[in-house]
Length: 241
Image 1 (cartoon, rainbow, N blue to C red):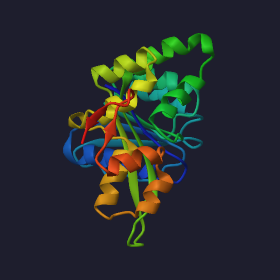
Image 2: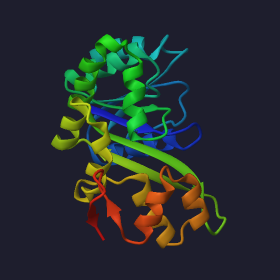
Image 3: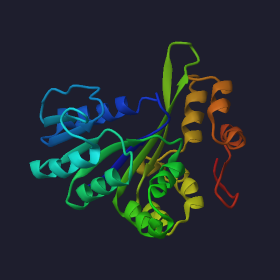
């Protein structure tokens, strides 16, 4: 159970990534999957899983309204096309609390802004409790951008991956957001990576150019140090070379 977010700006391939995740489950596991989309972008064929798709405006009035009815159909996994408002978030959390795995998307530019965006749905008086809820139910957040390949043959995704380990959960719940990036950067074994870590891989493999990497990096100065093999934590101590 829990919440998995795929985030990024408009046109960055969020729906494609989400569809690939659902299709991977469809091919490997026997699950009942329900999707609520606006509009439906990918039509799935049942393989090992049974997939039922609903479209906002045709099958239901809204994401939040659909979620109330979807839970009665006993799904294992729920895909929500977009986390748009407080009602949708609360319905998604309710699904998590009743043992469901929920996938959804948000329009944000990085991991920290994803958490901030959810908090902004709520008045300040509720944000501390919502922060604890996020820390408890969030399982992973993948933020992606599409950037041009060095060879000119299309685009390649650059991904920031947050896996909610016990440490990450604690940092979110205690509002120690400034420590999250160093925790991500230093825990590759959990499958985490920052944008800059992925940019280093793409530049060194010559998948993208140095110019492209520095243009899209959220912290170009840090990227420059990373390319030289220097990695710093939030206290500017070298944590790896």
